[in-house]
Length: 391
Image (cartoon, rainbow, N blue to C red; front, top):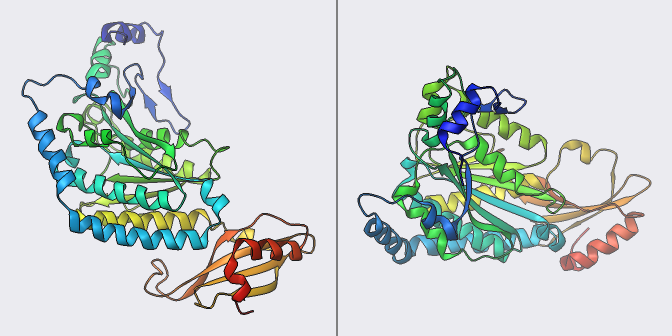
């Protein structure tokens, strides 16, 4: 049972409660009313509405299930191509240790076609990655109420202290736990409930999504955020002098997670003028969203398997094998003590998004072997096309 707002507020006033914060200075007035809900239990967590939204929800579900067939076919075709690229480029054991988390903005502006587009896009990406042997997780984030909810009520009882930090009740939603399944549960449709969509505190949602991907279990961790704008919570923005408190925290959270090795991409729905992160795609709904999310996933996976230049220093190429299609190559390398192999992909001007020119890019490094001969033998066993390649 949640602590009444009057008790939380009075404890703050008496100094028995301290603000929860992080090293960046971002802080939270109270976490007492935050919640994490599994989608199967979501309907029970939603408040009763004066006007029954069931009809609207059923209409949205019917549309999700029966319309957009042509769009789904197009997305599935692109997904099949992505599966081929990933299975060719990334070893089976590496794919098994990779997870992609899809984090969906559940703000009020996502109501209607934008949420339908986000769901169709995520459905297609989960299906493709599942067939490629890559695990996925699907999450959502919103707030429990408008106007700050019980957190704001507690703040009033505390005497309305200045600059209280985040001042709302977060609701984080789990639609699909991380795993290799490529099927989305029926409860994913609850995202179409209009009474669920409130406000969005993106930075804390991103940190929560990352915390769920335990590093010892996953070697490569990727988060794709699907949103249509900047973080907004009216209660927080009205009570704090810093109007950038939420956007600044999102940027800092993203930077900190990147430093920890988490790859973060953003799919921005619509054409609103918002910040453009390091790794992002834009799309209009609905088909474009699905194609753009597949493209974003490909770029994020490429980044995850491409470390900085320090990783290739000190190694010399002993042998090089190029596939007959001219699109892939493997180098057997040695630093004088150990051996390894590196898989390379050829990107032409049509697919080279950042560079706009043809280039070879490393996409997979093996572990270390006792020498280049052992590395070459293992590469031969892993990639059957090496036996027919040219050196």
